[in-house]
Length: 605
Image 1 (cartoon, one colour):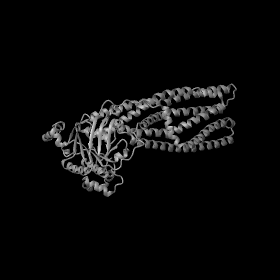
Image 2 (cartoon, one colour; image 1 turned 30 degrees about the vertical axis):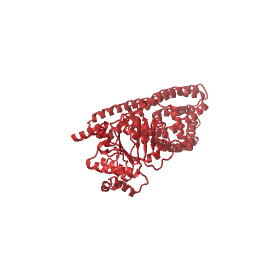
Image 3 (spheres, rainbow, N blue to C red; image 1 turned 135 degrees about the vertical axis):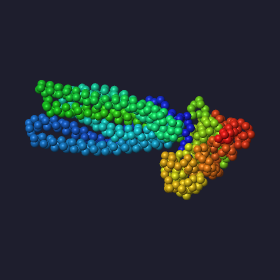
C-alpha cells in the first residue's frame, strides 16, 4: 500500500477518551502473566536468587555474631576475640555486598530484556490489529501504553522483583534464627505483624484502584495533547486557544486528583509501619528485660540481636509497603499492555488462502452489505463491475458510503454479506498480502515518513533501484522540485513532510504509487488544497499513474471525473445512479443536481 490507512470508522478523535473505564484485570492473573515473561530468563534469575541467599545468610549470621561479640568478648573485655569477630563480620558484609551488586546487575538485565520483549510484542500487535481498533483509540492513548505503561513495568522488574525475593528470604532466615534464640521474644516480635499485614492490605486495595485511574487519565491527557499539537493550525485559525486550555485543565486536574489520591494512600504506609516498628522495640526490651531479670536464659547480646532482628524482619515488610507505589503502577500498566495484546486481531488468512498472483483488474462487487455497528447499515446491496483498465468514480454527499466501499475492497473491514472478486478471485479466499500488493492508494491527506524523499518513494517497492525511483518521480512531476532541493533525493522529510508543500507531498505520494506498479489504483482526489498551477501538475501525474490500470476515484470536484468510464452515485449506502457523465447529465437526476450546484457555486466565486 502506498499511503497511510484510511480511517473513516465510527470513532472520532475523542472517542476513546470518552469511553467508560474497563474493569481492571485480576491482579493475580496479571502477575502470573508477567512471571511467564520473567521465566524466560530463569537461569539469570536462579543466579540472582543464589546471590540473594548469600546476602541473606550473611546478614542473618553477621547479626548473630554481634550478639556473640557482646556476650563473650565485650562483656569480658576480650579484645583479641572481638578483633576476630570483626574480621568475620568484614568477610560476611563484603560477600553480601558483592552478591547484592551481582544480583542487581542480573535483575537489571532481566528487567530490560523483559520490557524490550513487551515493546516488541505490542508494536507487532499494532500491525495485526484491524483498522477499527485505531478508529476507536487515540494515538496518544496507544503511545501511553507503549511508553509510560511499559516503563512502569520496567521499573518494577528492575527494582521490585529482586526486592521481593530478598525480602522473602530475609523474613524466612530471620524467623528461624529468632526461634532458635528465644521463642518468647519471637512471639513478642511477631505480635505486631498482623497489624502491619492488615494495614498493607487495606492501603493496597485503595491505592491500586487509584493507580489504575491514574494510568487511564494519563492516556487521556496524552491523547489530547497530541491531538491539539497536530491540529494547532486549526486551533489558531478559529481562536480556540482558551477553550483548549480549559479542556486541558479539566483533564490535567482529573489526573492531578487521582495522582494525589494514589500517592496519598501508598505514601501513608511508611509512617504507619515506622510507628508500629518503634512500638515493637519497646515490647522486645520489656519482655527481654523481664526474662533476663527473672533468671531466664536471656542475655544482653540476645536482646540486642532481637532488636536488630525485629528490624530485619519488619524492614522487608516496610520495603514491600514502600514499593506499593511502583508495584501498583506497574500492575496497572501491565494490565493496560495486556489489554492491547489481548485485542482481537484481523481475521487471519484461512488455511486454504492462496496468493492472488498477477491480475488484470477485473473487479466485481455483488450484493455487498456492511455496517460498522450492528443495526446501523452503511452499505446496502451494492453491486458494481469494473473492467480492466476502466476508471470508476464514486460521487455523493459526505457520509454516503464512498470511502467505505474502498475500505471493503482493501479488506480494511470485512463485509457482512455478498462477495467481492478480482479477476474471479474471492478476496476472502486469497491472502491479504497478495490482495493489498495488487492495490495502491493515493489519499487526499498524504502521509510521509521521517526519512529521505528517496526512502519515502521507495516505500512503494523496497527493492527498487535509485534509477527506478527517479523515473517514478519524473512521471509524478516531482523530479524537478526534488532536484532543486539542497540535498535532492536525500532531503530529509520531517513531521509527516511538513517541511515541503502540500502539492509536493502529493506528488511524492503519487511517485510512491507509481513505483508500486499496482493493477488496481484507488484515488482520493487530492487537488482541492493546492494552487491551480500545482493542480495541473498533479492531474497530469495522476493521469500518468492511471494509465493501464483499473482505477477507483473518490471524486470531490466533479469536473475532474467527466471522462470516467463509469460514475457511481452513492447516497445513504446505495448506488442510486450509474453511467458516464453525459448519460447522467441527460437523466437530470441526483448527479445532475450535484454537478450543476457545484458549477454554479464555482461561477459565483
